[in-house]
Image (tube, rainbow, N blue to C red; front, side):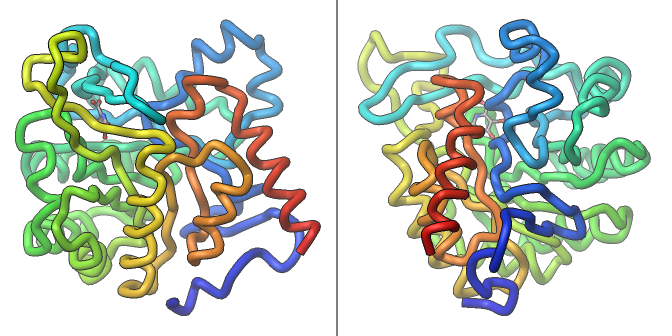
Length: 299
Ligand code: RRO
């Protein structure tokens, strides 16, 4: 276990992540919580009592994308398979239309970006970094649902080269999101750290074939598996990466209870993130945080 990973907060729930002071360690996974829909469903009080201590946006790309054709989500035992395909307004649309609303959230904002080349990543990081409302960036080098989306996330040399280039152009924290598709996920984590990453988030969804006709959610015949089905894979990935790096980890993959969150924190994660459970109950993170608080109090 590395230096930062000295265990759980001694008292209270506050944590610091890359210089950001967070009220508790529970974040959202990118793309799993839609702020406008939550406000429509639960009213403005959802903003005052926000379920996450830090908000991570849906991944954005340079150009607008409509995403994959429906169905985009299919149920799987103990989880779901998605093939959303990165729909977003593109960087220009994000800054003009999405960012002003996200800037009103009462918590720090992490913007998730994905480029299809080093140059695209450079553009995304440069333009989002210029925005004062953006507190940190998550580099999604691990989307399972677009062609070549995983090129960086499975190759240590690509990952280190990319991070080195991006480190030169921003002082904002760079969080790198890892995929379990990498044969040796620890080697991608250490490559990102060498390149100057400030933190790692892991894991993205597990690339999974979709075999039956009823499950054929999109053209490619595959998607990303998430939910309790991948918790053991996520914990094993965290264990491997946490032994190899010194930068903080944000653990995710199948967290739906405070006890799940605690399992990741015990392995040394600085924070955790809730994803699939938000689709079942968008306010689940309140419950998970409360359960976690009860576990801390009983220690
Ligand atoms: O949009 C997606 O299909 C997607 C993304 Br960007 C990602 O990072 N992980 C995922 O499971 N789906």
